[in-house]
Image (cartoon, rainbow, N blue to C red; front, side, top):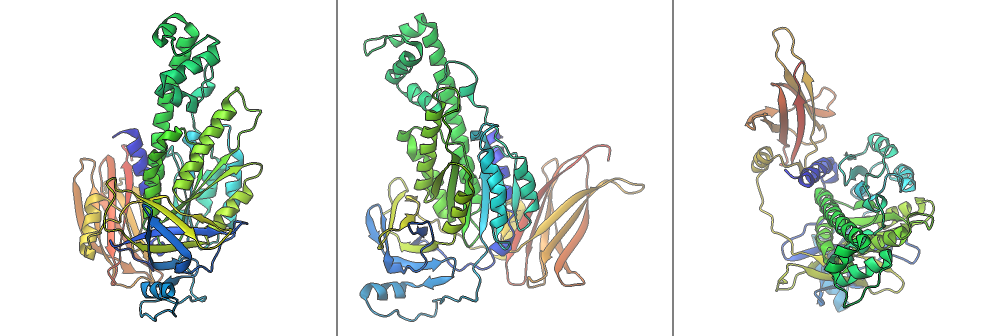
Length: 529
């Protein structure tokens, strides 16, 4: 399996393990006739605007106005039905509806899910230390009831979303960039953005050669002859091709990893924030449509993106580096805006920018708009959302894809599917721990498996254990969880016979209400135990 695929699977699988208490109370359901959009509305000072009605929003899909059918303000659980929308549009009082949910101040909203992604493959080892240190202080300001996780584009740092901040803080303290920056290796200096342009255009390559080699060039100049006769031109051409290849591969991996982590966050309810600490994005402006898959993933998953990048200082060497970094900064800003998020150029201490993240996450309107009858040929809706109020900033993705109909499965079918595929499920919070039980007299090597489910879930709770052996044979067995003496949890402890090799443990469980959760865990049994 290619390295990037292994990385994406590792990132996605880890982040999908957030506890299902994030998912227990779904208050907004999208159907195939409605497109769900998450919109953040801020005033001039970056504070949330919290008093908007559906009639305040103007939404267009491919420049065609669409009616807001449903709206939820996630911080207050205020829901407005289609009947209320039509009544407001007609200028009459809202029509009562049995499906409407009034704002209830005594009812807390769903916990937020916030993931910090360190884009360490775009950050040089000595850069962005201020962003990492400020991130530690930021973690301390996040409400204790919200879930926080950590990911990285290199895959070197992954912390499952949790209420326990200690593992995350431990990893942040040793965070640094892993970018093997080719701009710093050899002379002449050729920026990544410059290399991409020169590699795409022979005319621009001639300009770059003239810039670094001081040789006259022009439209009549034979590029092949110049490269053959002039050593400096040959070196510039080689550097252009090497840096352009590096930039294309790095950017492709960067965007694929962003999308994988966003998809891993999709099943959580409430507000979801992905905070990306980046060194920039090396992509030509004419290729900005490459950002569309990330934008579509963000809107489909209901994830708001915030990107932070340190503004390069003028003292940075070699010459030309600052300009190249600022061009990459501009492209990262374009990505954030296309995805309906925010981009902050960090100058000085980053703390105030992190606090803007918390402000914007308390201003999310989840609106549902009816779809046009025709689907665009490229499968992409171009989205524009504005608000009928002066002086406000609206954050919304510029692109969306039609929602995909979901096939409803029974709890039994969901469990069987999870065991067969290893896919995590979230409606029931299931935790699994595994350790090696060393061989002893009359006792072979075994894997000690411990599983628990919170005691407040309605029992009885039964499940399926799947064990994928080193020879890739899947064996399953059924088990009932037993409520602990204090009633705080349901538990299951068992031994799985094992040999030397890599095992994948899969467990899926369902409670009395039909909620299903599934987890996986890989464990390696080594010789000599």
